[in-house]
Image 1: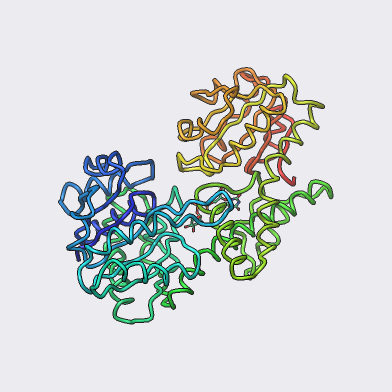
Image 2: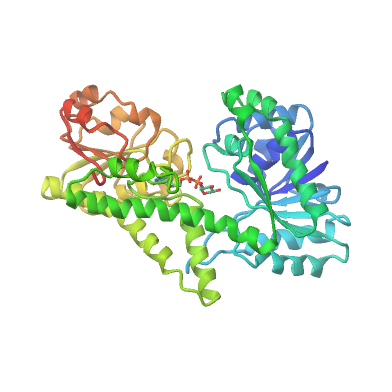
Length: 451
Ligand code: UDX
């Protein structure tokens, strides 16, 4: 099938690369020429495991091209995916400017009976407005489908191959089935995609995997996406509020959540307490949901409580360091990990960056290091924070080491060696990933979150 994908961010680039490697002819479209140039050279425009390999293979066999021109990408496409950004407005509502601009520009070029598939996260009710927008700019019959994306950064390809569910919101079965068939093609090619992307998913995992196709109305599909992310954010904030209690009640939140999560109705996932959630999705999806509920006269104060709790976590951790030293003035702190989570160079709304800034603001001399996110974190870090090229450089002279993102290489640090070279007193385990005893055996005082 001829497919166009508008937007070459995480969602769009992954979608384009997967479909091109599943036998389709894909045009990736982005207004940023640096992104389309990167793709045409066979490279992902950002770091995501396996994505450059898939793009390289698709460019080589001619199944993928990238362009900045709507006129080139849209007219022949039977299915057009819209994967443009939906950042948040200063008031927390979703900024739908790019979503509407893409629809307006694509509409006059769409062929009759083309399917316009919205993958960007939008508030419930947006699709109905976009159907009207498309109609304003074309007289041809166009189908509109909401097909929200659930992939996570860092595991984007694996999440797409081993999906839990594909949600398709459109009440016409033939339209929904045509979109579903694209995902079925990805499933058929999953072994080849796994080997090109060098993901190392076992044959057993690939064979056993069964995801479901959830066919719903347009508005329900839109609400499924934001509700899923809001619920996960709620789980994290709930774990963090119990962590604050565990700190006072002398309990260990990791043990507590292991016990709580063993109840299959609850589940262990997303109950890891720490410095809180960040990134390009949870913060904006939660604020977008709160704001769209408000417009409908519904007060989602359960989510505003989660937001407040989440914002308090970096300060909560900084206070623990302050209490331990008496004051942060002239204390040296090394913050290891700045990305909002491991496996990505993305530092948007990263609580690790906020933590570094709070420590510096409160008088500490802060050094910072991340294996991938230095460049993307730098603009959001205070200018008095020293940017380092390695763990050794960041920790060479420090009083406290704060592991703020749970990168594998940081979790596996040789603590005895780090203790020798840094002579730091404190190890602050901001994601609760270290064995407390091993940290103490290495000679550090251990500080966790709720432990
Ligand atoms: C999320 C959703 O998981 C995904 O389905 C959606 O499509 C986009 O938003 P992503 O933002 O890539 O994906 O990251 P995710 O892995 O979900 O983590 C989000 C944040 O929560 C990270 O900052 C992570 O460190 C934090 N987190 C996660 C916790 O603090 N505790 C947990 O238990 C889990």
